[in-house]
Amino acid sequence: MSLSILNQQKKHKIDVRRIRRNLHKLLRKLDCQDNEICILFVDDEHIHDINKIYLKRDHPTNVISFAMTEGSFGNVHPEILGDIVVSVETAARDAKASGLDMMDEVEFLVIHGLLHLLGYNHESNHPHEAEEMGKQERELFFFLRHYDLD
Image 1: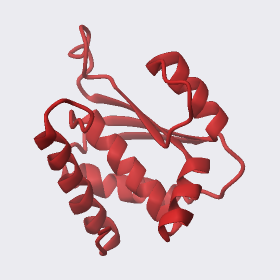
Image 2: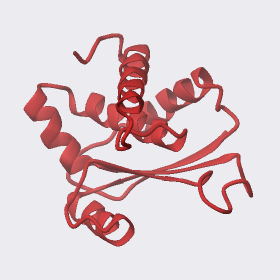
Image 3: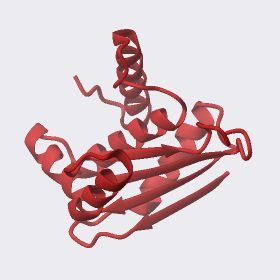
């Protein structure tokens, strides 16, 4: 398993060791321990630029995933799951608004991004897909943090 974690934002402290340790746990649980993932922590300005360039959405967001197993060449290196980009600035605001610890919110976003890399989709026209993804998010978050988000 290869994990690359890069923190390109300076506004909030990120516990990279915790992210790495818990991502290893998640990948083992999901039977993806032999896969490669890159996580990039950025601020709102940076994720806004990524969102605008790649998804044609002109606003910041909390997390974006780029699955390497999709598309015409998705089978070239199936061991590379892809990239997850998290706006720590948005995560901090969302955590404060919902009364969550900021690192718990960041880990939730990593779980969300990881599920996208594994093919889960909450934005499709099929409501059952969003329900299944939400169920997986809650189960994986409980697995890591031992409390429910509900």
